[in-house]
Amino acid sequence: MKFPLIIIAAGMVLFTACIPALKSRDNPYDPAGTVAFTAGKTWEQATPSAAFSVRWSFGTLVYKSKMWIIAGYTGGTFYNDVWYTSNGTNWISTTTSAAFSTRNGHAVAVFNDKMWVSGGVNSAGSYVSDVWSSSDGDLWTAATANAAFGQRARHSMCAFNDQLWVIAGGQSPASPSNDVWRSADGVSWYPVTVNAPFSDRCWQNVVVFDNKMWLVGGSYNYVPKNDIWYTSDGTNWSQIVAPDFLPRDQFGFVLHKNRLVLIAGQAKATAIQTNDVWYSANGTDWTQQTDRAEFLQRRLHCALSFHDVLWVIAGKNNNNFEANDVWYSK
Image (cartoon, rainbow, N blue to C red; front, side, top):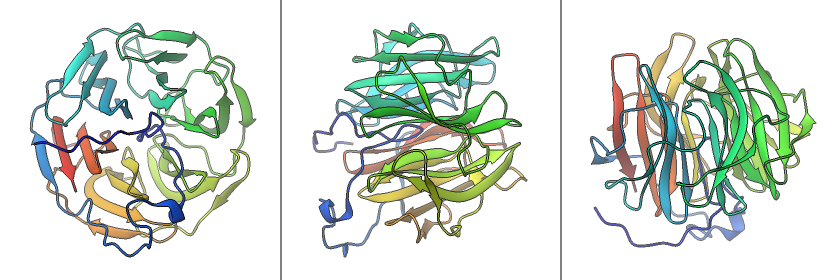
């Protein structure tokens, strides 16, 4: 499978990371807002078994015109490896053992032309508060071993308004937080608010869109949510009307062709894994693109927008399915 080479700005990232805001009037894909949005409706498999091992609860981002996978976990094994691809099929390892410890539940982002990793749970079961950066995926530099935001996992991190942000998460799914932190260098962190108006949560996702940070879903004590909040400063948050999709956590969330796209995840407190796809052009009105994608139901996967294509990578479900597959939709 081949895609045309498209240069992507270093800040364009998505997952538990964020991507720079794009105003609707500047949308290069659909300036008049009239072109039908087809991404996410039908899916094809790039590979059923990528070179990286089966995993979930990992980090993904887009950096220097490549998709990257960072660390993660599979039953009993924690990773600190780093992989990249330029086509979704062929994956190359930059390191099998990065300088940061093995972990899952960490957050990743692109900021100041570097890849960043923060927090997570290591193989000893300890929550960490370190922050690392790299410009090549091989050599990693510690910004701080003990960030002021404290030990946490299942949080969100993104680049917004020339700052790196860490939002929510915590040391247990049963006792997460609703705080917001920012940093200009990844070293010194400052609390923007220790009690945001959205409730305590983990496994939420945050994306930058329309010059705002958008927070969607997550869970408290394993009970999923489907509320949506946005902010232009990290302090003042506004909630929109609850969308039609099921409450969920552990889902994929990405900005693609100026639409917010939500993919699969774990819905309801009954731990139902899904493979549905939803999108919105304004964060308020949501359309179900498909209720059953070609890939299997999953959670703890990642989603990316890369080469004008929507991607879903790896994950697991509760039916003994664990994956290192890669899927795409145009």
